[in-house]
Image (cartoon, rainbow, N blue to C red; front, side, top):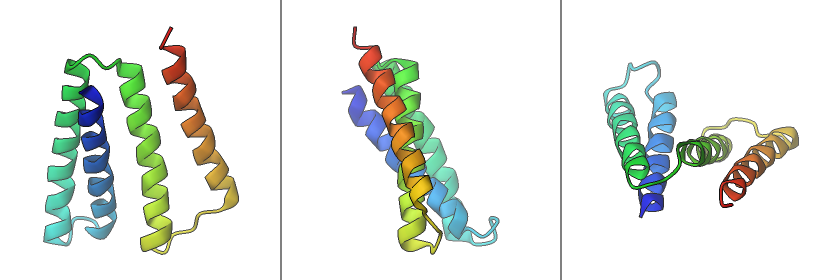
Length: 107
């Protein structure tokens, strides 16, 4: 069950971060509201994942890595931002590091 909450936290954080770009410095109302609501929801759901037994290092590592990867891909696909092969490699390394953190904690 903690993974359900973590996935929700990741989705809320990615939505909020994407909306932060679309808010144009909080000058646009709807994206600005989505930013605030999204970040509050993300932290609330992350806290629920932790309260239900997920280790902090694993939760934060997965949350951060998934957020980085998803925001980079969304930026490249929908916001006209660049994504070089070096950046793709960096994302793979971050994900690999989180996997190592998760597998190392399984003992």
